[in-house]
Length: 108
Image (cartoon, rainbow, N blue to C red; front, side):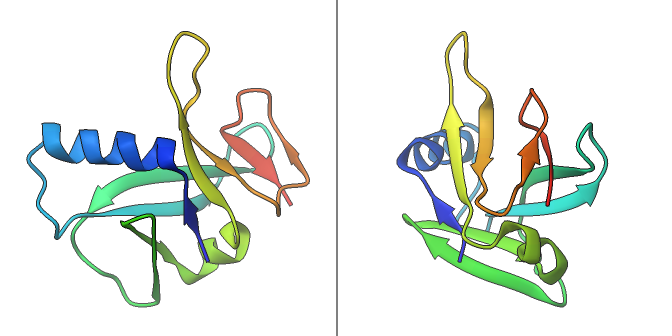
């Protein structure tokens, strides 16, 4: 399962409204090689499903990821932090053994 915190839900709803995205759009997350710690998170809005997509809905937000990325993201929570010290969107990932200082990459 992938989880969505209230902070992330509010920001996702705001972005969707500002960009006139209808309910066909969902949040796509993935993990790719790269970053200081070896793996990086990617997040975008999408409206086309792909083969092997895993679909989750939490807190009224649909989140889609590919099967390989789900192995790294299982039981993670998508969160959002704004303000001067904010990180933007980030994951609380129980599978990450270490993260880089900026929080945008991790290792398992």
